[in-house]
Image (cartoon, rainbow, N blue to C red):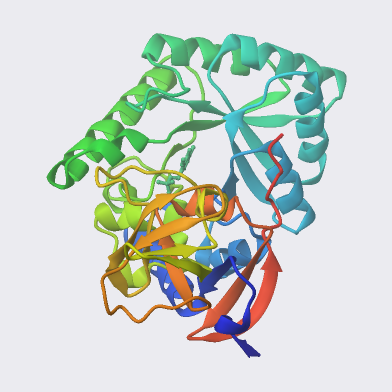
Length: 362
Ligand SMILES: Cc1ncc(COP(=O)(O)O)c(C=O)c1O
């Protein structure tokens, strides 16, 4: 075991004590409301972290991409939901091949998406599982009306090769809700899902489950009637955006270890971690890109590709060669910048592991 400060920089670090706490708190949240937990692994892209989540009690995992699903199945995960539409013969063929080896499912929100899947499933004599995506307010993909959902459900039902797993939504619009509105907005999204499920059943169409998920709304949706499953992702690490949404800063498990490479005369320390190490997401009005662990007043006022600009005051004591741990604004995009992460307890590195699903974007 070596000290984290002996690692070369920039280096992704994950604090194991905090990670384990985040994993067990979310598992408790799901258990308390008697819902299944299917964490979104796009945040960590790591079979190792997914195995810690599984050990705490999960009903399978969620991934964003088919390539991530292939990797996770190869790593022994048998129940994987690809929360995305799969379009085109190449992907459908891979998806159906994967379906031969594991319980996998993908998303659909259109007849144009379902029919080619049904045709290829039939020609490959391979059954496939499909969740119908519902847009509950995010305005991304998903059926926007009950009528659309019924049409998609009918297309699935008309193929003996496809099975509808249920309806799902990512209620990510709740990131924009005022803190005192989260519960009400989560309840509204869940009510929408219940109504759609009820109408599908009334129309003789199967809808076994309702799956919802995002970190800020996880507890609120889990408590809603009719919700069977939650799919939060970022909770595993936390980040500055989650802190703004009420996540305990002391639970932020992900940092980027960076070195001071230059000190400007105007009191700015230049770090060797910029947008290619921390990502450039900046949802904050004060245009800050990260903060120093345990010193949240020390913020990155700017990033260029390979440099971070840390505003410091006179007498700060920082010098070239010092190493600092930076909490990123957005854990998912930050992780996506790195090939490896070190897991540590306190200042001791326990292992250096690959961000194995990185780059599996197809
Ligand atoms: C389909 C889907 N499910 C779950 C999540 C997890 O939400 P969060 O990032 O808030 O943890 C996301 C995030 O983008 C998502 O797109």
